Image (cartoon, rainbow, N blue to C red; front, side, top):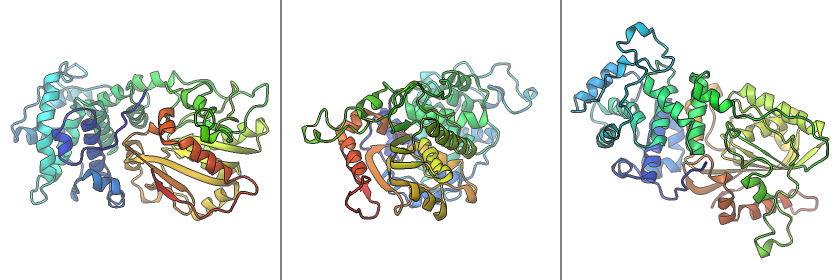
Length: 451
């Protein structure tokens, strides 16, 4: 599975007027901007330069109060006629009394037709333009209608993002939301699959599409018969499905065992970043749960896994997504020692200065590598609207070296060895690790780099 590498996104209304892969992902980003506002996270957009580049509109009065009946009426007032009645199909495990529904069918048979996708193509630009008109009392209704109708977009990423945003409202879920998320669990895109699985696990944890993914998970950790390396890769949430890049023999794992040193003459004196990666059959893996409790349990499990193998000090830990939070929790709660922690696409959690002090005592250096406007990280923020549990957009500059790469939207680009090779990332990681060694020259405070 892979995501498109997008260097130049399509901003604002132009995204809905264009066609193609970049247009689809750029449309999804616009919806995420609306979703953040819908969930009271306008602060994220205000502090995010990426949102300005994307020209995401501000819709101050946006709420989610439009019943499906009003939505259909709103669309009809704009000469838009849906090819079915939204509310006569009960969907999968619809959380309402089924006697309300007039049809025994779960979903309409023609809702995924090309003709309907063309209708969405035609209507979406008009609805988006209405969201820009603050002098009208319909800007918020147009934004809500755009989110609902986008669940039928020709682009899977748009369908799944729209469904995830509507699901985050925790209100009545109609069949298009569940259908889009179930389909997203089968996506060939790492980012789309993670968004779909994250959301479906919150609202319909027994859905067959999600259970099918869970059935693909590997077995738990068992002690190995021999010693091995003292560096590891920790996968993120849902990474254990069909993504093997992080496992021994996987694409990034193999690459890190070779680079730097094998392909670049200038690095001939350096050991490969992953020369000491643990590659026994009992390599570490966790249950991939979304909750803080799951990640705390995984942190204790990681510390126990290391103790069972007499690993007192991890040299390098490379962690993807919430795997980075597992590593940080293991440091804070269990005192697990790490020389260099490299986090890829990790959603920042709010931590107290006291917690960061505990982490700093046992972790010598932390690098956070991120892409621009990571859709998974931002949608994670949509689910954390309670003030006391709100997550943040970036890790604190005084604690973490933040490296931003010029790739847009993806939650998996930085797990691709081709990207590491193209950008010379292994060389920089090796240099960062060298600074943790005895007799290394003192360094300045953490840096913020844009590649």
